[in-house]
Amino acid sequence: MADMIELEVATPERELVREPVSEVQVPGAKGYLGILPGHAPLLSLLGAGALSFLVAGKRKVLAVQGGFLEVLPEHVRVLANVAERGEEIDLAKARAELAAAQEQLNNLGDRDPESALDRVALAQARVDAAEQKP
Figure 1 (cartoon, rainbow, N blue to C red):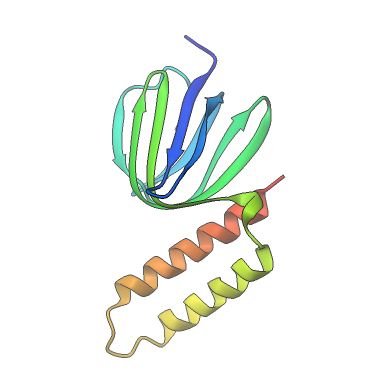
Figure 2 (figure 1 turned 180 degrees about the vertical axis):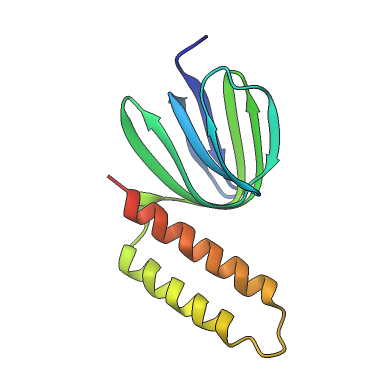
């Protein structure tokens, strides 16, 4: 079994990651998945959360939301609707956005809650990624 797996993370706008890593933690639609080299093939919907991975012993983190995940024994491909590097996120601003999103969710009235829930999930993912940055 190889000790590295190729990780590729892209959005419609840009490619964020393409490098060999030793492990990946990715938010699936039904919870987090831990992926190591040699993992069984898998397709999944991508959830919202902090995607983390190890490169040369250093943990790196992205905030992701929505899209698809493909796992092969030697390759992990994440096609995200939204992705942002943890080190690019202003933590104070992300926390303010989370508070605003939670406030909107609490005051929905007759509006559909789905978009408000999506906004909270992305805001929480951004806070989580920013808090985990090295």
